[in-house]
Image (cartoon, rainbow, N blue to C red; front, side):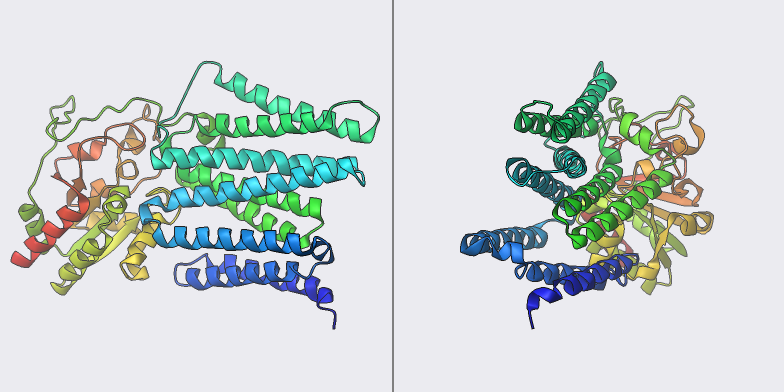
Length: 478
C-alpha cells in the first residue's frame, strides 16, 4: 500500500483530535487529556507530512533541515514549558502566539515569492497570501510587545501619544494600498517592484502590530493575548489556503474561532467592548497609591487599618465560612501550596472554605484555576464569580490575596473610575475582610481600591507566601 494515499485520512484524524482536544479544554478535569489528545494529533499530522510527494521532492537536504527544526523547536518548547514559572505562563503564551503568527507570515511570503518567480500566481492566491502575511506579522509583533509588557521589559501602562489614531490609520491604510497594488500587478501588466512592495507590506504590518498593542495597558493583556491568538489562527488558516493544506485550514479556523469567542467572553466579563480595550488606553493614568506606611485616606476620614498575622489567624480560626480570593499577588509569591495548607487546617477545625475566581484574575484566562490546581486544591472548591457572589454575605471572613481591581467597589459606584461597570467579586459584603498585600500600590488599573478603606477590612502587609505561612502558624496556635 502506498502510504501517501493515507495522508488525507491521517489529516482528517488529526483534525478530529483537535476538535476533541479543544472540547477537553472546556473543563479543568478534562483539560490535561484534551491537551494530550490535540498534541498527539499534531504529532500524527507532522509525521504524515514526511510522506508528502512535494516534501520528498526536496531530497535529503529538505529532510535534514526539517528534522533539525523539529529537534530545535521541540527541545525549546519542552525545556521552556518545564522551566517556566506559573507567573510567567502568560508571557509564554504570548511567545507561542507570536511564533505561530510569524511562521504563517513567512509561509505566505515564501509561497508568494515562489509563485512570482516561477509558475505564476493568481490574484486570489495573492490576496490570500497578503492576508496571511499581514495578520501573521501583526500577531508576531503584537505578541512581542505583549510579552515585553508582561515581562516588565516595557512599561505595562497604557502608552498614549498625540496623533496615535492617525499613525495607526496610516499604517493600516498603507498595508491595504500596497496589497492592492501588488494584486493589481499580478492581474495585469502594472509595473511595480513586487518584492519591494511585499517587503513594504511586511514592515507596515510589523509596525501596525506594535502601534496596536503599545497603547494597551497591562490590565488588558489577557484580552489582547486572546485576540492575538485569534489572529494567529486566522493567519494559519490563510497559510493553509496558500499551501492547499486542509489540516492547516481546519486547525487555524478552530484557533481563530475559539480565540474570538474567548476574547468576547473576557470583554463581557469586564463589561467593556473590544474597541474600548484596543483604543481606550485603560490604565494610562499615573499610579496614585503609596507604599507601606503611606496611609490611604478618604475625604470622609476613613483610613486603612493594619492588622497582625496573629490577630488575622484568630479571626480565621473561629470563623464558620471563609472565602479565599486569589489574585496575581498569590501567583507572584508562589503561595498556592501555603494557601492549601491553611485551607486544610481550617477545614480540620470545621470551617467551610471555598475560593472565589474572577474571570480575569491573574494575567490570562484560567490563571488562578491552574495555579490552585497545581496545589491539588479540589476543583469543586473553585467557584466562579456568578456562583460565589451570593455567598459573600454569609461569609464570616473573606481572605483576599493580591486581587486588587477585581475586588474594587468603585466598579459599582464611581462613574468616573476607569473600571466602572466591570463585574467584580462582592468581597465588601463579607462580615470581615483580610487583605494580604505587599504595599498600598494600586493594581494595573492605576487606581486606589475603596475596599481597603472599608471599616470591615484589615490589611496584612507582606509577601503572600510568608504572610500565609504566618497565618498557618497562628491558626495552629489558636
